[in-house]
Length: 347
Ligand code: KG4
Ligand code: ZN
Image (cartoon, protein in one colour):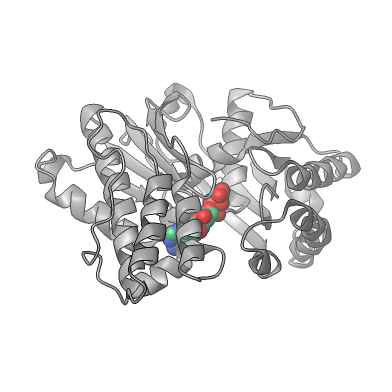
């Protein structure tokens, strides 16, 4: 089935065309494949950068401008309307004025071209982005699984029994991990979005230079907290005027990743997970990937033969291909989401 997907929940306007194969028989079928035919993203970073964060009305204006441009690019590449079977669109969570632009655009397309339309959750999109791989995914071998979604708006741990049965086992009690990166970057005078900037700066610093707190590391739950870590950076800068910024970036990053990796692995051990899925913008960070690999190798709880499969998504930041994946699963399940903007939609 070919799916055209639209994503406008925050500051990326995205349209993708995918071909999805796979079914939900027992939710554990072999040979799932979501092939990406087109994956276009128009980033608004430059527009929001002077404001140090996303301005909802500017995001809306840019989405309205970019959606027809991206759609025309898809058509110009030879894709015909009759070539796809379903239109998918993000309905939440996100900025409501931004979400509405995508929903209205998708509805108009569906009406004009007489195609079915289906709503998808942005969080399901991140979660299912592990299906967007070049290789086929064998669902028979990867569950139970633990999923960590680490983005600008969320830090959530899920336990998945199979593809569609999952429950939340932990989440952040304050700032999301990406949000903490963005705020720490601002303190360090680095531009928005802060995640990639901290990663770059950290390469030139010593991650052991400063012993920042590892919030909630030793608590027997799967929740997170990142606002104290950001405040620790603030105080450190206040008290150490000549500190090397690269050391602060590297030490901050290390503290955040220590908690994310350890708590995820602890959950994987408790629930005997065969796989760990990591998704969301922060999953773009190469050091996070290295830390996960290192920890899995080192962990005495995982003798080599039983180490969980690590799926760090190849599509961490916002895109529409992941929305197509989530929509395809909704389609197979017959799950209908309201086609209205739901800013606080939860997983
Ligand atoms: O998933 P995403 O694109 O949007 C949301 O759904 O929020 O995530 C964006 C977040 C931002 O906070 C950004 O700073 C962070 O992901 N991010 C990173 C990196 N790339 C993006 N954080 C750490 N390291 C990165 N390389
Ligand atoms: Zn996102």
